[in-house]
Image (cartoon, rainbow, N blue to C red):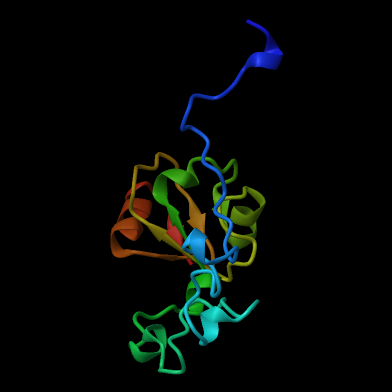
Length: 144
C-alpha cells in the first residue's frame, strides 16, 4: 500500500451540486429557489430567530411565567453542620464571609436545620428557622 494511492470507498464522497448551470441539470434558471420572494433574493434568506413574518411571535404572545425575587440575591442560607467549620463560636455575617460559607454580596443570612452541631454558638445579626433555633439553643447557644 502506498500513501499516494489511498482513495475513499466508491460512493463515500458525493460531488457538490452545481446550481444555475442550465436546464439539463434540473437546477437551472432559478437554481432551486423558486420565483421571487425573500428566499429567492441574494443575501436576504436569513430572518432572525422567532420572526414570523410580522405576525406577533409566539414568545411574545405567551404570558410571562414565574417570578424572580430581587431579594434572593441579597439573602444567603447556611446549614447547621456548616457552622462546625468555623473556628470561633461568635458568629456574625462577617465571620461567615471570611470563611467563604456565604456569598460576599449577601446582606441577610438565615440558618436552616440540616445536620447537627456540638458546640454552643452565639449568633449575632443572623436569622434562623424554628428548628435551627431549637437546635442551637439545645446545644447551649444563643441568637441575638
